[in-house]
Figure 1 (spheres, helix red, strand yellow):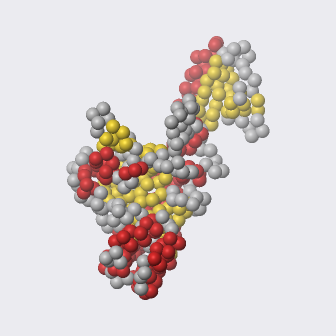
Figure 2 (cartoon, rainbow, N blue to C red):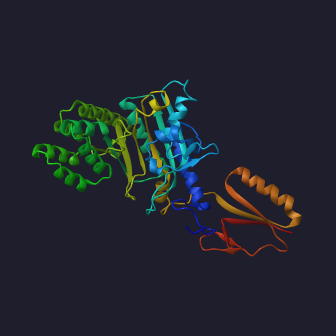
Figure 3 (cartoon, rainbow, N blue to C red):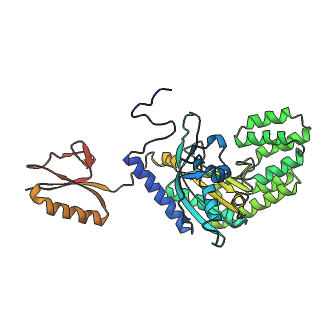
Length: 399
């Protein structure tokens, strides 16, 4: 393997230059403030975790974990999500805190990926976890908060696709109860949104026409509240019916929040069926073909850390949201001011710069100049340019 070039970065990581960094921090601030207004308190966990605890409990595939050894030979991982680390904290440092717990976070996470276009090995997530409440009210709160966050960030057009793993589990158990391999095959097709492959898989299973028609029917179960009644007619399985009842209760709460217009029931939405235990959802923005947020209920995770409790939450894909918001958006930055001064005006100039900074309305840079100062070029948009750098204004204090 050749030695990396001096400016080369590993695949899947990126640098954020000042403008992009400012946009990222602005977005982070808007999202965290929105979550705080809903009663969610921020938590910060380590970048490194033990593989045998957080790594093994994570929903991330083992091959996608970044692993390393400490000096004692113990396997560590770079955190691949925030849900498992928060579950660890809830079960240890917060074990005496009563439920429900509402926690928020903004962190970078790491996943080892193949060299694929558009895939990041390091990316940012902003999200929440609501622990200790198994009700449909809490699931609806999570959906409503995700919508509020997207709106607070300035995402103009989006839809939340809402499903429930219990419906598919019940339907497949009813129709394919002794064919676990077939169930996994069909679930994999739905998880990857491969509907053509799903239909082909159904044909290959040699099912009776009525069963195949029933399983094909779920591809049409996408819409509003009417989907609940349609889904009940498709199966008699009690697990599937309980899932539909839960979604209907959620819909009533979402209507009370006034956000149901942003939600689409999609019963092909399954999420990671080995991890999620109830409702699952993804949020899609009109400008992008992949999710900007995702989440769901994961009631089995905390038992792995010794404090069994129901839990639900979501993560916003901050990097992807930044792609949308940076297109034609007004730059949300302070005015950039240059204050130039001669040696004899140093005290006056630096004192004035401190006053301007304290007012919080401008980013103020200072520059000692010799003689009569610098050449200042006025630009057509009203800004000024000094030595190739553009400022909103220049203040000159020279003798």
